Length: 272
Image (cartoon, rainbow, N blue to C red; front, side):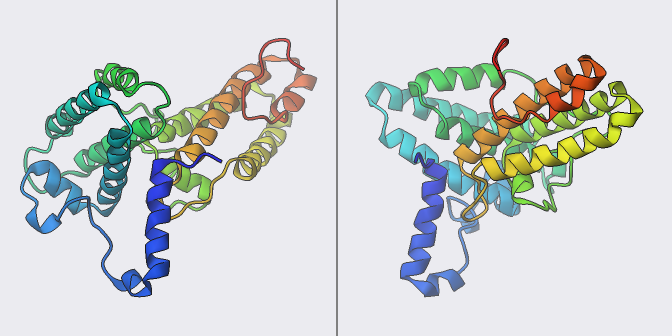
């Protein structure tokens, strides 16, 4: 089975603790560098938030692995891209002075998580993935959200995730926004479905969440879900959004059976 570089990093840590139990009692890495020597606004931001520091450690390992496995031309492109990306964050996230705002820290965390997800899930030439990422990065850092809950990281409180599925959602900025889109689409479906079917809609959503939790590999080591888990959940959520948009438009008697037809990938037209 494919294991992401991020997951391998976590396995390495677990193996080190198993071989040296005393290590588990030492302070864990706060970042990929010595926080006692932090000087720049970005370094201070990373060291001021344990979750950003965790993301920085994972990104460092993923970046190193990608660099090692790239040819000379690709390696040069990756190094230059990483340099430009790091230089862009202080301005993009508003790290102009301390103390840093929560909005700025959330921005930094999102940037690191999106970056290591991109590198970790790149199966093409790295230059192709970098170009796609650069095109996306040109968009303003305005996080889309439900009208009633601006600047949310997900449709629930990511400071207190209550399940393995919620942990996976909160570990990926893009996935968190997909979760918000799903919540809004679910709400919209409820306004279309007749009142006598609302209970069926609620039960369908509960059963679907159980389906995703059983089907996707949500187990984590060290708190950072693998790219495989995040990709599985993202695909499932996108499929469910399509269902919630299409099924309520069917005849009344066909709506709930349509919503209860659980699958990870969206079915092509005409597929049984």
